[in-house]
Image (cartoon, rainbow over all chains, first blue to last red; front, side, top):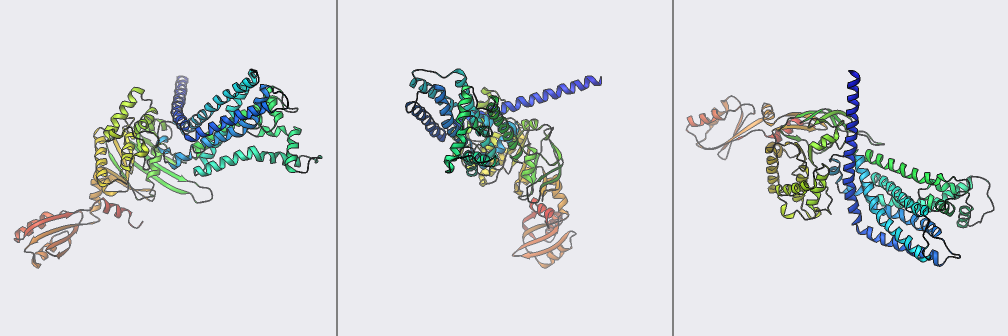
Length: 305
Length: 313
């Protein structure tokens, strides 16, 4: 008899958890839909996307036309990923999502949202989903246009399927990761100004100051080799030596930028020596998963606490 | 409809002292009440409301809203109540009708029903003519009405209003009070937070007075008035002809009269708040042949009750 009651209780608990999840998912979709349209119809989205599209197309053209030797579509895509996607993609995610929470805080619209039947985690998830979809959609379209143009310039040579899928998938993961990092900043920041400045600071750190991280690691990791005395040349020398490629695994954009060895290796299926094939993939997936968990939990704890 | 027990909220902040915003408060709101939640600014009204609407988790204590526990079943709480916050934050780029539809989606109201309900509510709050205007272009009074409309989009049995008439002109305030009465007539229990004493006195049947994060008193307005009458003075002001010292002396002798003053043909009689002696005074004046033009009785109002209960704080 007691067993039957316990089983009923467990079943009821399961139903209630399932109902809660279903409810939260529905609420998150409602939030995401609004965020998506609000971001997509934003003027700054239009300007940024146009600039991004032009940069990608012009860079691809330059990389093909002014190369010392004939390029393959895989190499061009790897360069586009390493220079354009990894630097401008995160910036787009940051600029379009920097005020996703601070705007709600300053506009006092959070109370109305949080009084609806959905959890704070669902609100955070909906915001992330809406913003990233709005950012990723035009970027994906532009990436496809770019691949088409690259193929046209290379006498209709198309990139291999794994490079094609890898390029698009990693681009989305990179944008999602930066959108999540910006969501964390936006939740913690008191004003939109602080949020965008912190976001750009984060972008500068991973895109420029990371070179300094590599340089410092080189200095503290052992005896100095005969490297150029000019610090910039020294950094370039250290990067090109490929000895510190593994450091790029600790950078959200590292798997596809900063180190050509790692970048081209990832897309062509041969990582630099010492780095297993799964490591760059694990790096970006971990970056994404950790950012996702932290973003949702920070929102849950910080908002209206 | 609402039951709180030891509800407490403490805000912890790094490097500074903890702030007790709400301190072990207990009160009950019955179905069908228009319950006034009164207190000076900073008393903890909005924090309490945020806990009751399951936006904020309490530090300790419990509360049930519409029969559901705010900690264990926050979604059920939210599904069964409507909330109008003090600060009106809308997505200003959205049209009023779209905003209402957006909020309706959270309650899984079918698509065909959503627009119909949004239109009905905009008509109810007098915004039908501007239904397709962006919320950002609305005046403060219109935003208040829109806030009321969104609060009842899910046809709640309980409506929680935080300072609903703040910033409205007298006409807007009156209209708003009428709307609240209409909603109450439809069977919605109203929980109204305000620091405007006459508003609570006019609209509510029961009141909870909060001061310095604690409940000072919870009772009906009538009971509060009766209780407080024994502690405060009432005034009877009489305008009459043929008043003289003899009449004043006779009035002073009536049990319950504390003081009598004559000023420009008016007598101001100070009496004990818990004794109604105006019939005695009236019959004395008639017996003495005094022709009374007006008699005004000034009983203690909620403001005096409030000041009496919170004096010294």
